[in-house]
Image (cartoon, rainbow, N blue to C red; front, side):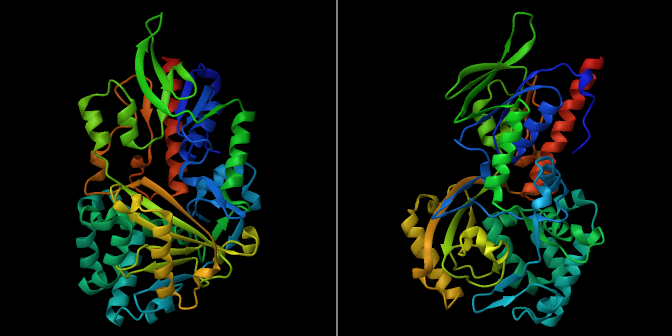
Length: 456
């Protein structure tokens, strides 16, 4: 657990944490252990946010795909707090690559050399690019360089056109034109983290039972430590008011609980939601919050009678496919976790206004199954035991040029009001580890601020 300020010197405050995803849960735990009276307000009927679980036929598993790396120290720290880290299963996985004609392995250096889409010189430049990016420390300098310019200069126009561009478009859509080189740097840095600590290879881990079990344990731990969990409590408004002593406090109106007053409120929602519910923000604060552009995701979960392949992740560079990757969780997680079946995710990253969000599950299923038949000739739609679609219009912020300079501050002009969202992950990618790391950093800052006020 991260070291905390001396809680005996900090006077307890009534604190609301808005949002029950991993960031909100981590903040609630740390602020409670820091001596505060904490209430967590979550709009959904269950905890987890993007990490929440759901039922797919007879199986309960994660609504979106997640994986823990050996180098994910912040995720492992939380799991240690929950007495779950020792139960993790660690697996070496394989990666696939589909260029529109065939699916091949891309799991090691030899596979890269065999990659049919690139010529030998292009492969060598690709390897050099990845190695060079893994050794860069000053990510801020990359924020001023378009990712297309940077990758083309290092890897060459051919490698960019055949490999990097399709992969960037799959994740960022046309937004890749506005994206900085810091995005690809952060991706490579995470994958190379284990090698920098001396490990020969990166292993992927999971907790048996998935995030359903993690979130259940997290909720139990928070309740046991005195955090009040209010589910189905969508926040409608937050405004400053002065109490009888003249001290500034925050009035929070939410569904299911009326109005409550807190000394401090920490929102872990997206910036757009924060801008909508917070009254009294300055024009600059509101502009910055509303100006963060997000990518959304439409992610289909399929439970299959038999596996598609033995690759955990398959990259797709065919722009005609309706999804942007194939994630076969059962190539990584023991199939016994899924009743002996195979679990596959088919994500489609896209803009929040994409008409695809309005398509029915039946339409999405027909398109996605037809595409699977192209990639896997042995795939039979009759093998699909369950099919379910998750739609989230705002998942991660586009890391545009100069992104860190455009961000809203986490501490607002309204006394006691803070915004800690995925938009504040400026030198990483959106994953559980970076989310928890952000929450840990914010909690330390808030508790240190309390200590300074108590000593002044």
